[in-house]
Length: 283
Image 1 (cartoon, rainbow, N blue to C red):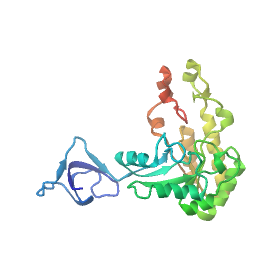
Image 2 (cartoon, rainbow, N blue to C red; image 1 turned 135 degrees about the horizontal axis):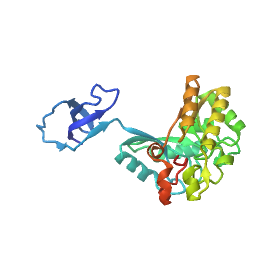
Image 3 (tube, helix red, strand yellow; image 1 turned 90 degrees about the vertical axis):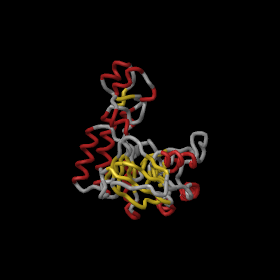
Image 4 (cartoon, one colour; image 1 turned 60 degrees about the vertical axis):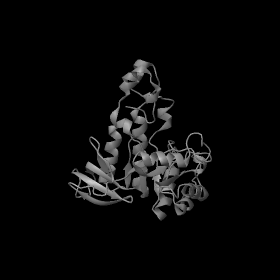
Protein backbone atom coordinates (compact mmCIF):
# COMPACT_ATOMS: atom_id res chain seq x y z
CA UNK A 1 0.00 0.00 0.00
CA UNK A 2 1.37 3.39 -1.06
CA UNK A 3 -0.54 6.45 0.09
CA UNK A 4 0.12 10.05 1.04
CA UNK A 5 -1.92 11.45 3.91
CA UNK A 6 -2.28 15.21 3.61
CA UNK A 7 -2.75 17.64 6.50
CA UNK A 8 -3.22 14.99 9.18
CA UNK A 9 -3.10 15.87 12.87
CA UNK A 10 -0.99 13.40 14.83
CA UNK A 11 -2.34 12.19 18.18
CA UNK A 12 0.52 10.46 19.97
CA UNK A 13 1.88 11.92 23.20
CA UNK A 14 5.18 10.08 22.70
CA UNK A 15 5.78 11.53 19.24
CA UNK A 16 7.59 14.75 18.38
CA UNK A 17 4.68 15.43 16.01
CA UNK A 18 2.00 15.22 18.72
CA UNK A 19 -0.88 17.64 17.98
CA UNK A 20 0.91 18.87 14.85
CA UNK A 21 -0.62 18.88 11.37
CA UNK A 22 1.69 17.12 8.92
CA UNK A 23 1.83 15.06 5.74
CA UNK A 24 2.52 11.34 6.16
CA UNK A 25 3.96 9.18 3.40
CA UNK A 26 3.25 5.45 3.58
CA UNK A 27 5.19 3.16 1.23
CA UNK A 28 4.59 -0.58 1.06
CA UNK A 29 2.48 -0.33 4.20
CA UNK A 30 5.20 1.37 6.27
CA UNK A 31 5.45 5.05 7.25
CA UNK A 32 8.54 6.30 5.42
CA UNK A 33 8.33 10.04 6.00
CA UNK A 34 6.55 12.61 8.15
CA UNK A 35 6.95 16.27 7.33
CA UNK A 36 5.11 19.57 7.18
CA UNK A 37 4.80 19.26 3.41
CA UNK A 38 5.54 16.21 1.25
CA UNK A 39 5.42 16.27 -2.55
CA UNK A 40 4.04 13.35 -4.54
CA UNK A 41 6.37 12.73 -7.51
CA UNK A 42 5.45 9.03 -7.75
CA UNK A 43 1.77 9.89 -8.02
CA UNK A 44 0.73 7.84 -5.00
CA UNK A 45 -2.89 7.93 -3.91
CA UNK A 46 -3.51 11.03 -1.82
CA UNK A 47 -5.93 11.12 1.08
CA UNK A 48 -7.04 14.53 2.28
CA UNK A 49 -10.05 14.84 4.54
CA UNK A 50 -11.46 17.55 6.76
CA UNK A 51 -10.34 17.16 10.38
CA UNK A 52 -8.14 14.15 9.55
CA UNK A 53 -6.39 12.67 12.59
CA UNK A 54 -3.83 9.87 12.86
CA UNK A 55 -3.04 8.00 16.08
CA UNK A 56 -1.36 4.85 17.24
CA UNK A 57 -3.52 1.73 17.10
CA UNK A 58 -6.24 1.45 19.71
CA UNK A 59 -6.74 -1.31 22.27
CA UNK A 60 -10.20 -2.51 23.34
CA UNK A 61 -10.02 -4.07 26.80
CA UNK A 62 -13.40 -5.83 26.61
CA UNK A 63 -14.58 -7.53 23.42
CA UNK A 64 -17.16 -10.31 23.15
CA UNK A 65 -17.22 -12.34 19.94
CA UNK A 66 -19.25 -15.53 19.62
CA UNK A 67 -16.77 -18.20 18.62
CA UNK A 68 -16.79 -20.93 19.82
CA UNK A 69 -20.45 -21.77 20.29
CA UNK A 70 -22.21 -18.58 19.24
CA UNK A 71 -20.84 -18.09 15.74
CA UNK A 72 -24.18 -16.63 14.65
CA UNK A 73 -23.39 -13.72 16.97
CA UNK A 74 -19.93 -13.14 15.52
CA UNK A 75 -16.96 -15.19 14.42
CA UNK A 76 -13.39 -14.43 15.39
CA UNK A 77 -12.48 -13.60 11.79
CA UNK A 78 -15.35 -11.14 11.33
CA UNK A 79 -14.84 -9.57 14.74
CA UNK A 80 -11.17 -8.94 14.06
CA UNK A 81 -11.94 -7.55 10.61
CA UNK A 82 -14.36 -5.09 12.18
CA UNK A 83 -11.79 -4.17 14.83
CA UNK A 84 -9.15 -3.48 12.18
CA UNK A 85 -11.50 -1.29 10.14
CA UNK A 86 -12.30 0.64 13.32
CA UNK A 87 -8.68 1.46 14.13
CA UNK A 88 -8.00 -1.21 16.75
CA UNK A 89 -4.73 -3.14 16.62
CA UNK A 90 -5.36 -5.31 19.69
CA UNK A 91 -8.39 -6.56 21.61
CA UNK A 92 -8.89 -8.39 24.90
CA UNK A 93 -11.32 -11.20 24.15
CA UNK A 94 -13.80 -12.10 26.90
CA UNK A 95 -14.41 -15.76 27.83
CA UNK A 96 -18.23 -15.66 27.49
CA UNK A 97 -18.50 -18.30 24.78
CA UNK A 98 -19.83 -21.86 24.70
CA UNK A 99 -17.98 -23.61 26.09
CA UNK A 100 -16.55 -20.96 28.39
CA UNK A 101 -12.84 -20.27 27.87
CA UNK A 102 -11.52 -21.95 31.02
CA UNK A 103 -8.60 -24.18 29.95
CA UNK A 104 -5.23 -23.93 28.22
CA UNK A 105 -6.70 -25.73 25.18
CA UNK A 106 -9.37 -23.03 24.87
CA UNK A 107 -6.76 -20.26 25.02
CA UNK A 108 -4.64 -22.05 22.42
CA UNK A 109 -7.69 -22.34 20.16
CA UNK A 110 -8.33 -18.58 20.25
CA UNK A 111 -4.71 -17.74 19.53
CA UNK A 112 -4.51 -20.24 16.67
CA UNK A 113 -7.72 -18.90 15.09
CA UNK A 114 -6.40 -15.33 15.18
CA UNK A 115 -2.72 -15.98 14.45
CA UNK A 116 -2.66 -14.64 10.88
CA UNK A 117 -4.71 -11.51 11.50
CA UNK A 118 -3.33 -7.98 11.74
CA UNK A 119 -5.20 -7.41 15.01
CA UNK A 120 -3.63 -9.03 18.07
CA UNK A 121 -5.92 -11.08 20.30
CA UNK A 122 -5.27 -10.97 24.05
CA UNK A 123 -7.41 -13.80 25.42
CA UNK A 124 -9.02 -13.48 28.84
CA UNK A 125 -9.61 -16.78 30.61
CA UNK A 126 -12.49 -17.52 32.94
CA UNK A 127 -11.69 -17.03 36.62
CA UNK A 128 -13.77 -20.03 37.69
CA UNK A 129 -14.62 -23.30 35.96
CA UNK A 130 -17.51 -22.74 33.56
CA UNK A 131 -17.70 -19.20 35.02
CA UNK A 132 -20.06 -20.57 37.66
CA UNK A 133 -18.25 -18.98 40.62
CA UNK A 134 -17.68 -22.26 42.45
CA UNK A 135 -13.99 -23.16 42.01
CA UNK A 136 -10.97 -21.64 40.31
CA UNK A 137 -10.27 -22.53 36.71
CA UNK A 138 -6.83 -23.59 35.44
CA UNK A 139 -5.32 -20.13 35.86
CA UNK A 140 -1.64 -21.03 35.61
CA UNK A 141 -2.15 -23.36 32.64
CA UNK A 142 -4.12 -20.67 30.81
CA UNK A 143 -1.43 -18.13 31.65
CA UNK A 144 1.18 -20.44 30.15
CA UNK A 145 -0.94 -20.78 27.01
CA UNK A 146 -1.21 -16.99 26.60
CA UNK A 147 -4.10 -15.69 28.72
CA UNK A 148 -3.53 -12.08 29.77
CA UNK A 149 -6.12 -11.94 32.57
CA UNK A 150 -8.89 -13.89 34.29
CA UNK A 151 -12.52 -12.96 34.88
CA UNK A 152 -16.05 -14.30 34.82
CA UNK A 153 -17.58 -11.92 32.30
CA UNK A 154 -20.09 -9.54 33.94
CA UNK A 155 -20.35 -11.86 36.93
CA UNK A 156 -19.18 -10.63 40.34
CA UNK A 157 -16.96 -12.79 42.51
CA UNK A 158 -19.59 -13.41 45.17
CA UNK A 159 -17.33 -15.51 47.40
CA UNK A 160 -14.70 -13.22 48.98
CA UNK A 161 -12.51 -16.19 49.91
CA UNK A 162 -12.41 -17.26 46.26
CA UNK A 163 -11.13 -13.81 45.30
CA UNK A 164 -8.57 -13.96 48.11
CA UNK A 165 -7.26 -17.32 46.91
CA UNK A 166 -7.21 -16.18 43.27
CA UNK A 167 -5.15 -13.09 44.10
CA UNK A 168 -2.74 -15.04 46.28
CA UNK A 169 -2.32 -17.81 43.72
CA UNK A 170 -1.83 -15.42 40.80
CA UNK A 171 1.04 -13.68 42.60
CA UNK A 172 3.26 -16.64 41.71
CA UNK A 173 3.05 -15.84 37.98
CA UNK A 174 2.07 -12.14 38.06
CA UNK A 175 -1.44 -12.88 36.82
CA UNK A 176 -4.16 -10.25 36.50
CA UNK A 177 -7.45 -10.93 38.28
CA UNK A 178 -10.58 -9.04 37.23
CA UNK A 179 -13.60 -8.62 39.49
CA UNK A 180 -16.89 -7.28 38.16
CA UNK A 181 -18.07 -4.53 40.55
CA UNK A 182 -21.54 -5.53 41.64
CA UNK A 183 -22.92 -6.85 44.90
CA UNK A 184 -25.75 -8.97 43.51
CA UNK A 185 -27.68 -9.22 46.77
CA UNK A 186 -28.15 -5.44 46.61
CA UNK A 187 -28.46 -4.92 42.86
CA UNK A 188 -31.07 -7.68 42.70
CA UNK A 189 -33.15 -7.52 39.55
CA UNK A 190 -32.59 -3.82 39.03
CA UNK A 191 -32.74 -2.78 35.39
CA UNK A 192 -31.55 0.82 35.73
CA UNK A 193 -29.92 3.14 38.25
CA UNK A 194 -31.87 3.51 41.49
CA UNK A 195 -32.70 7.20 41.44
CA UNK A 196 -35.56 9.60 40.96
CA UNK A 197 -35.82 8.53 37.31
CA UNK A 198 -36.34 4.85 38.21
CA UNK A 199 -39.05 5.86 40.68
CA UNK A 200 -40.76 8.02 38.08
CA UNK A 201 -40.65 5.24 35.49
CA UNK A 202 -41.69 2.53 37.92
CA UNK A 203 -38.63 0.39 37.17
CA UNK A 204 -36.56 -1.62 39.63
CA UNK A 205 -33.37 0.17 40.53
CA UNK A 206 -29.76 -0.96 40.83
CA UNK A 207 -28.22 1.40 43.42
CA UNK A 208 -24.73 2.85 43.16
CA UNK A 209 -24.05 1.27 46.55
CA UNK A 210 -24.15 -2.19 44.94
CA UNK A 211 -21.06 -1.27 42.96
CA UNK A 212 -19.27 0.69 45.64
CA UNK A 213 -19.58 -2.01 48.30
CA UNK A 214 -18.07 -4.57 45.94
CA UNK A 215 -15.22 -2.23 44.99
CA UNK A 216 -14.48 -1.49 48.65
CA UNK A 217 -14.54 -5.20 49.53
CA UNK A 218 -12.26 -6.16 46.65
CA UNK A 219 -9.74 -3.44 47.50
CA UNK A 220 -9.72 -4.55 51.13
CA UNK A 221 -8.94 -8.10 50.01
CA UNK A 222 -6.23 -6.84 47.63
CA UNK A 223 -4.59 -4.94 50.47
CA UNK A 224 -4.35 -8.22 52.39
CA UNK A 225 -3.22 -10.50 49.56
CA UNK A 226 -1.18 -8.37 47.21
CA UNK A 227 -1.34 -9.23 43.53
CA UNK A 228 -2.85 -7.44 40.56
CA UNK A 229 -6.53 -6.52 40.40
CA UNK A 230 -8.53 -4.94 37.59
CA UNK A 231 -12.04 -3.61 38.20
CA UNK A 232 -13.86 -3.30 34.86
CA UNK A 233 -16.59 -0.82 33.92
CA UNK A 234 -17.02 1.25 37.05
CA UNK A 235 -19.82 3.79 36.93
CA UNK A 236 -19.84 5.92 40.10
CA UNK A 237 -17.75 8.77 41.46
CA UNK A 238 -17.37 6.94 44.78
CA UNK A 239 -15.78 3.99 42.97
CA UNK A 240 -13.28 6.37 41.40
CA UNK A 241 -12.46 7.81 44.83
CA UNK A 242 -11.96 4.36 46.35
CA UNK A 243 -9.63 3.24 43.56
CA UNK A 244 -7.70 6.51 43.60
CA UNK A 245 -7.12 6.11 47.34
CA UNK A 246 -6.01 2.49 46.86
CA UNK A 247 -3.53 3.52 44.18
CA UNK A 248 -2.15 6.22 46.47
CA UNK A 249 -1.50 3.41 48.96
CA UNK A 250 0.51 1.59 46.25
CA UNK A 251 -2.03 -1.17 45.68
CA UNK A 252 -1.70 -2.70 42.21
CA UNK A 253 -5.20 -1.92 40.96
CA UNK A 254 -6.56 -0.62 37.68
CA UNK A 255 -10.03 0.08 36.38
CA UNK A 256 -11.96 0.86 33.22
CA UNK A 257 -15.18 2.61 32.29
CA UNK A 258 -17.59 2.07 29.40
CA UNK A 259 -17.82 5.11 27.15
CA UNK A 260 -21.59 5.40 27.51
CA UNK A 261 -21.17 5.79 31.27
CA UNK A 262 -18.96 8.80 30.56
CA UNK A 263 -21.33 10.45 28.10
CA UNK A 264 -24.88 9.61 29.22
CA UNK A 265 -27.00 9.66 32.37
CA UNK A 266 -30.16 7.79 33.32
CA UNK A 267 -32.22 10.75 32.10
CA UNK A 268 -32.09 9.25 28.59
CA UNK A 269 -34.30 6.38 29.81
CA UNK A 270 -37.35 8.64 30.01
CA UNK A 271 -38.56 7.19 26.71
CA UNK A 272 -38.12 3.54 27.80
CA UNK A 273 -35.59 3.03 24.98
CA UNK A 274 -34.06 -0.41 25.65
CA UNK A 275 -30.80 0.44 23.87
CA UNK A 276 -29.91 2.38 27.03
CA UNK A 277 -30.37 -0.67 29.25
CA UNK A 278 -26.73 -1.47 30.01
CA UNK A 279 -24.68 -3.06 32.77
CA UNK A 280 -23.53 -1.28 34.84
CA UNK A 281 -26.51 1.03 34.42
CA UNK A 282 -26.32 4.65 33.38
CA UNK A 283 -26.18 6.73 36.55
